[in-house]
Amino acid sequence: MELFNPNSNIDFLSWRKVSMVISAILVIGSLVLLGTRGLNYALDFTGGVLVEVTYKDAVQVDQVRSALEAGGFEHAQVQSLGGTRDVAIRLQPRADQKDAEQVGKTVMDALQKARSDATLKRHPDLVGSSVGAELRSDGIVAAVFVMIGIMIYIGIRFEKRFAIAAIASEIHDTILTVGFFSLTQMEFDLTVLAALLAVIGYSINDKVVVFDRVRELFRLTRKAEPYTILNNAVNQTLSRTIMTSLTTALTMFALYFVGGPAVHGFGLTMLVGIVIGTLSSIFFANPILYWLGVSKTDLMQVTKENPELARRP
Image (cartoon, rainbow, N blue to C red; front, side, top):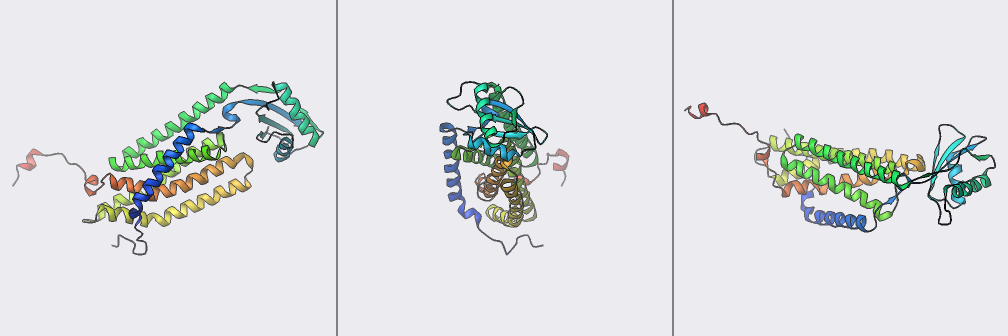
């Protein structure tokens, strides 16, 4: 049986020092950015003013958003309220606005300038920052629980060295993805948080595929060195990794460019996470596994000593 594919023999591990240095720089840079610049939290996490508007005739969300941008509200969140005539608008007050009533009046002026049939559905409400802070803390807890759950699964599924490499890769991918949003200062809202949780699952799935192949090759060979095994495991799963990444990325491209502003954050987060997760499966997880000293003995079952068997000739 041919264990190794002769058509794919790229020596990925030969780049391990360079790739690990780059990863370390990116992780440290991301942590520095998070500590200094932080994240640009959207209204989901910071609070703001809620204005509900109704139109006499049907209206598109994009039309409402354009009218608000023309009125100076560039980062307003607009959502349909289940029909074609009612919309909910969430935004941060400008520096010259002191209360929700004043914000509501300015918003209505901007909307009525574009369409005269816009009317206020009810009095504007001020969403306090405490609600946003609670959502933010709940989101962090959710992300932590997802990572802990994955760590438990990896710890049960794989041997110790495999589990350590997978967990290190998971933390690496998450930090870099969040660091991207700190660098660009793009809005971090609930859709981005949901995408981040999806990225965590996507990233670990790719590592599981590679590690499964590593285990299989170790069990099917007698004298192959760990360096050779790890290289060939990546080579043999490379086509699967690339195809999975491309098909998922194409879906996210469509979501980003066609899905509308409401899902831009989700699509972009997934795209960034796919790139980071794919590269870390090749250039980060395997070098970690190699430096941990994985070998065939790690996969051998430990048997209990039997005194009776020991007395047999």
